Length: 110
Length: 115
Image 1 (tube, rainbow over the protein chains, first blue to last red):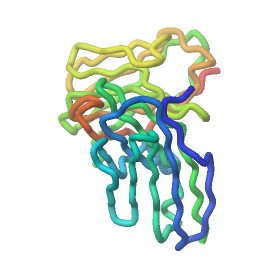
Image 2: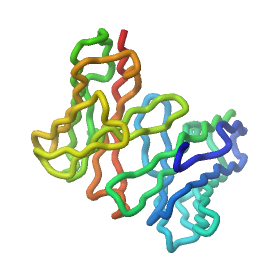
Image 3: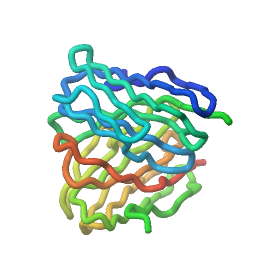
């Protein structure tokens, strides 16, 4: 089973609406990253939130981290068509490896 | 100018044939990674390297070899390609390993189809 998992599997919203993607993980972590992958491209990091942080913002993006429930969320406000992508969480622990979830597919329509 | 480039961008290979995927980075990063992406599995780590002339096994190394001849270049080699290796392959680079909060910079991916 996946060590990091996003939900829901897919979301569809209209431009201007807000949306939240959730991530649950199963191991002790040092940090969690949120990545976005647009069609035909590689993933790109949006936010990194460390285990001692509860919230991080980047423009229209806001990430939260709850280490007690081993969960994180990524919220996007005022969505745009160009936000259409797959959103991944990725966990960092005391290893050289990063563990990626399977992603949430977000469709933003005009 | 892209910092991580991959070649080829797509390839069709025959079962049992040899396939080499190449990755080049201009980030001056020590770490490089190879992932495969399949629907429903997200990104899975195949091999990685933190220094030239050395490679490490990731989570799914079977059927793959890797080569890091220089800091800038990292290759993934399929000696005997199989149908199950049909996937999109991504290369990435980062300053440090996962426990040091380093962002990974990904290439555009190589779509490999094995027939």
